[in-house]
Length: 568
Image 1 (cartoon, rainbow, N blue to C red):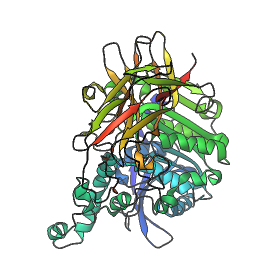
Image 2: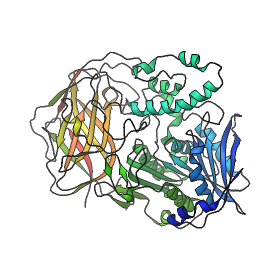
Image 3: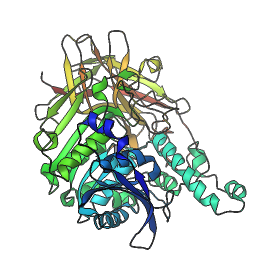
Image 4: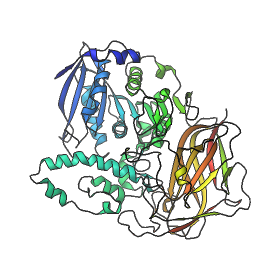
């Protein structure tokens, strides 16, 4: 047991407007037994004071030691804070498999935490990314003492929006994240072997060779399963959060970023629980310009400095939320609007009553021979290009995770791809007035291909007078999953199909003098895996064929970008 002096925190609390902190006692390496006998390891941060306190719980696969600073600060504010290694990670027993045990382990841990002698029975959870998933998956099991959650930059589904997007594998994330997780798995497995080098040499090289990954099937079998289940089949059903919104009786602050890889899920969780949860009145949505990465003190994300107001005070936000949700403090979460949005371009925050905004005017910008126009096309020839999977369009910024040093996330200049023959560019003239787009964005393409399967991509950018083309949002559709991700349907070469591309959401003020630009292509690699144009399953496919693509934009085939325009 260690004692943490309150003297280390007065500056933090003074700046955040919080009261004088408590001294904190830390109980390290506490074993918590799950229903099947597996013991998970946690550290408990206890305020040194009489009485009982609400509990803040974080369940993480990333090593509980990394949360020590925040946990101590939160405990000093009058919370019992518990940081736990999830099953099969670091000091916890069992085998790690993403999502599989988080509902039952989350339930058991919440109820154990509520019973601590210095706890008052009210439990809240916090954290981001997979740590947000541990909250959502715990909440669907309805632990009686779980009162509130604070899921940050996390998904609503673990097929669509975590592993796949419209049938395309989110390769960079799936491979880099699972490879990072494999480091601790390798350490755990090798620690019990007399000759770990020979064991590593025996690992099979199989599916991962196709995906240009190291042979880690014994370390991350879930990745192999993800690739094998490229359809939205029953494998994914146990983790379908939206099936449970109506029974998730918890207050929730859903927070995410316009450049985050899990943005869609953050919004879906808010909208779904706002409409169906018994705690619908206590759902909040916070969306900033953030990516799945740290923000600089100046508010720089990717290429763009959004200003200091864009910097998220993570610990302060958690404490203010739980002061309201667990202690009943009448702060901004009790009295303010349920939705708070950062409007990029204007670089300002705005409160709203709902999302999407009720005053939205969905506006079509039709594709017109290199132009975007609100006037519909007449008789125009299709635009054509050849997509070669051996030479895919490279990813430049955007919604990325992980391995941020190799492929940085966030807004980035898209001009380097404009000269490629397999990238079509459609732009408005310089705008004569400001145009705000806040909400869901989509593109409708009428297209044909010489292949039996292919991809179509769309990317939206804000083009400044200097020519800088700032990434806003993007999307993809895999042709064989154009109608449903539950069933593959090959396309007929040469036949024109209508493709709906979900570009997720954004909030941006296109200023007068700027251009709205849409890029259309058939690849965005390595953000998404390359479609080899053969219609074969991802697992094991090696044959590549080139595809001749045509994008139609005439009166009979009105391809268009649809923007959620907000009157100003």
